[in-house]
Image (cartoon, rainbow, N blue to C red; front, side, top):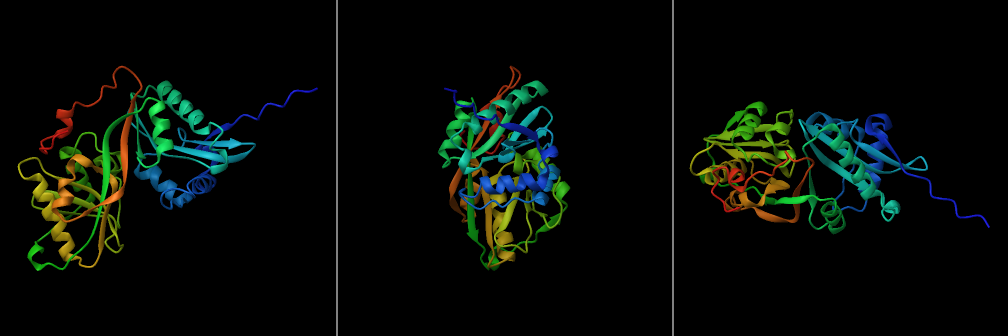
Length: 302
């Protein structure tokens, strides 16, 4: 009696070799039953390459018998890698694909000499959260989101200066928390282009996605170092909403929970979805930032 044939092994290909459009199709299928719709396109992946520093050679697509069943996007800056996105199609989720691809990505990051790998994961996505914890990732902080509708309040209408995206990104890089989530860091924001816009009110700076959209996405927010930083940011938010009444305003679950007072003061309501910002040290030099460094003068209790 012949023994059962062993299953065919998974094949991993670089994103650049597999192609952006086919990879987008794999990701769209894999995220079909996610918490919210995430339709990927080749153009959207190219924007992630340009803005988020996604590395097409370090990113991987997983094939089973020639068919894409998972994809993982790796962004890289310096000696830090970020798992920008990872998803497995429903039919392959019980086959250990997630663990196998993470083992590979971490080993490859170590081989490159990276010091750490970072990621964000929706806390309500318990299987993914457990996987990353088993892989050794530790929680840095909780990330939260906020929403509200703008109001036509003349009392809040103040003169706001429009500034270049580069200027705003530089201030966020200089005066923001040193370990901000990748997507709202100064390094990411400096790669943005119109229709994104940036504004300043006194010492507070903000970066927005298109003002023609609703909700208007908040891409970055900071106040220059000094007293009253939370109040300055809240005043800028209120002034913008007064200038654009009737629009919805939203920052996704990327905002450090310890700085939530800004949005509370501006009358925003907290969203139901939250994330864990996580990191994995890959060598002895990857020491986590001390809490006193992360507070950075904002006056919160870590």
